[in-house]
Image 1 (cartoon, rainbow, N blue to C red):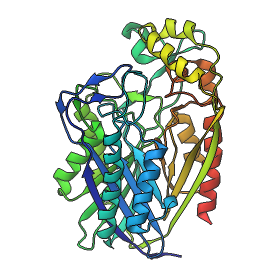
Image 2: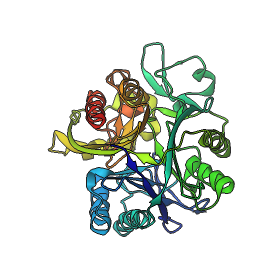
Image 3: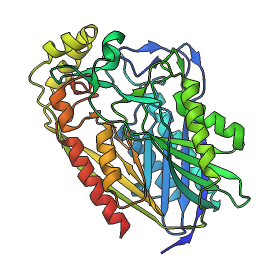
Length: 421
């Protein structure tokens, strides 16, 4: 049943002090400044009886414990149930460590983590208190020419990551997988017809910046441009689509990416068919994923493909080899917003897995959102495990067994079919 929709949006600053270690590389680098602030951004939709709360964080990952703590606060302060809350990280490689990632020396700061989940709840609370009559619309377009599949196959069918291959050799190797240049947009207008919030979903790694200053990466540039064009009150949220193996092409800079994506968003939002009616739905499902066999250290392949990282991956192997668990529990969630659906996947999904969900989904608009609600690391395809490469090197950021991605696809599609009824 379609009901009148109300919407609210808000954001809270989560920028840590200068000097904190920055995540996203093989080894940490200490921050020296702030190029642009990091935020927790929230959009809340309500049809009078149900809710959809989308939270976008300018962080590299978000872990389940953090999302559960934030969700408890959100429920206490607003009554929005856990299944209606999707919390995702942008995967900026120029932000702090919310979890242990590769560099064994760096540990997350507990006081900062507490601040993050409190700011998440505060952003949602403000969005909830600001609920007002709204009109919403969905759109899909493409932004081409920005990305490449970063995994390259050599003559033996073995995968190498493009940044580890000399430039003169890269052109001779074929990509190991596809790309996905689809841009999905959810636009929200207030009763005065001004834009209140824009959610965009795009499958490109947010590692274009990668400097020594903190940055929200290209999603931050997109947000700034949209605010300049539409007004500073507009909250722009980024949900990363399946881009575990998609990087920006060489020679394309941060502002170029941000301008290209923002331009496409601005070109479609005024041609959307907006409606004040809405049908919302929400599901949350716990899933169990098998872990890999960590009995063997992949010394030969790592020595060949990333020799300077051998010590890091040896340290990761030592951690993983002590695990007694053979599986981990995580969560999937799905939100319905009219003809659109958000699917929250708890890791860095390879592009083919996202494309499979989109192709088989019963919904017209599919915001496949990785790094949502939890972090289980890279989620390669079964074929990618056969090819090897960095994303299959055993690490805390790469530990689920082959077949996990395909299981997530099937579980996600079951949820989408249930939401459609």
